[in-house]
Amino acid sequence: MTIRILNTLTGKKEEFVPLHEKKVGMYVCGVTVYDLCHIGHARSAIVFDTIYRYFRYRGYDVIFVRNFTDIDDKIIKRANEEGADCNTIAEKYIHEFNMDMGRLRLEKPSFEPRATEHISEMILLISTLIQKGFAYQGGRDIFFSIEKFKDYGKLSKRNLEDMQAGARVDIDEKKENPLDFALWKASKPGEPFWESPWGKGRPGWHIECSVMSQKYLGETLDIHGGGRDLIFPHHENEIAQSEAATGKPFVRYWIHNGFVNINKEKMSKSLGNILTIKEILKDWHPETLRLFFLSHHYRSPVDYSEESLVEAKSGLDRFYMTLNAIAEELKKPLSRKEAEPPGIQNYRHVVDSFQARFEEAMDDDFNTAQALGYFYDLQRNLNGLLDISKGNPSPETHSLLKQGLDHFTQQGWVFGLFQENPEHYRDHEKKEGLKKLNLTEEEILQTIVERNLARKEKNYKRADEIRNDLLSKGIVLEDTPKGTIWKVK
RNA sequence: GGCGGCAUAGCCAAGUGGUAAGGCGACGGUCUGCAAAACCGUUAUUCACCGGUUCAAAUCCGGUUGCCGCCUCCA
Image (cartoon, rainbow, N blue to C red; front, top):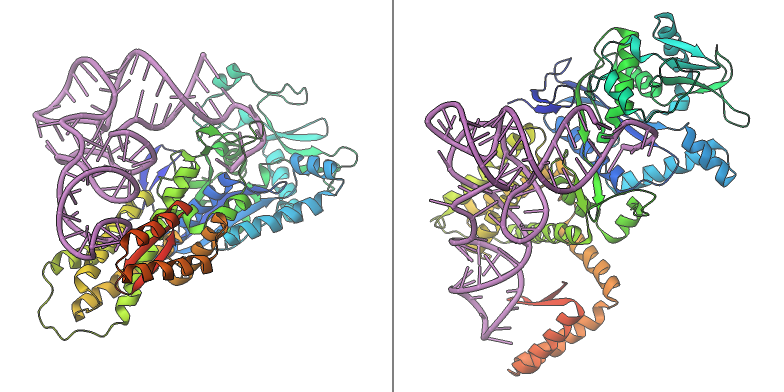
């Protein structure tokens, strides 16, 4: 089976055929480092991390490039506001970005180039574009002439007439066409600048991606990705620059992820509802966030809300409880029973077919939601297996449980899920939960002792009172054969 | 104004021609002192609405309604 990808360029699901067999060159637009990253960045990062992991899982040799835009109007503005220089601002937010991505447990890309480290290559590319007649000088700036590039608009599916009719474009006398975009901007006093054939200045936004992708991945990329909003103008402009310069197709497969809304509202500075990754990770385990995102298709819009994260957390908790129970069961001595437990064929079928179903879902345009459904399916069946095993596993049960557990670690790795030690996960979540409830473990354990005394005396009324009291505080008690355990509701 | 997307059970959400995955919730059962957890079962004759194509449509085509995004920096 081959991987099929919905290509933004064609609007169709296409079979993925890499330029070079078993190799993937993948470029994803990173961030402009002028502020903390928010949940939208997190989604994009998680989506492409998962795609990156899946290609590797499928045996591809992947070169993954994710850039930093470290020179730009917004950075200059920020620097002026804070009375710092641009470099300091960029360094600060690159550091923050790396911290966030680390906490989200993203795999490191192969290369993380910075725009400012590729200025000379950008100047070279701009010169080529001027030479070939695609770019011109207007005042002290250099612009790309979109009319010269006949395919302009092919990615975002719009034509020049439509866009001019829209006319929400700044009029700039230096431009021949209002839709032309800057390749090089002359620097104003006090702004950072680089020497160029056109005087002191700095690169436009789009040129860096054309240069850096070409440098690390060659003239044609297998995959280029980013958020939906980048389709126009950023990616459209990248295509124009790159293809005008090389005469070759720039990207074979374009992938764009959908947006994150907050409580059904668009996230924006004016609404003041920007949620940073930092804030989210204060309240939620990184795997909870991943589970939340991966239960939606990467292209669909996603609505972030407290309730949906609660749901994701409860799903993750349950997975880890099963994982923990399996680990415990596997430590038990094998029973010598020859007869297989009844109904085990069904369980065997689910466990055996899991990998194929997982890969089928992922091959189909990275359908993580579907694949996650199979994880739930697997979990339910493993729990069923645990029920019939009852601490006395037959060799067959044992091997199926082991096999199931391996799926959680191996296929789970693609999702960045189930990678924790279940006991550590449980203890960590308990600790975090208690913090929120303002309770200590000692109090709870003491109360449990008290309740078990009552139970021993068959004073069930008192025992239930104690249990209800804890429940109202957010603690759930479970009486198991091995004693009473507690967890945060 | 132009372009694109979405509409699936109480909620979340897969599913692009073959007769509705999965999760949460709810209800019934097994287990339990009772619960909880776990498991089993039930929970959409139907996919916004109206037409059409087809042996067959949630899926394709046309229209209607409603939501959203992009066209300006933006993941």
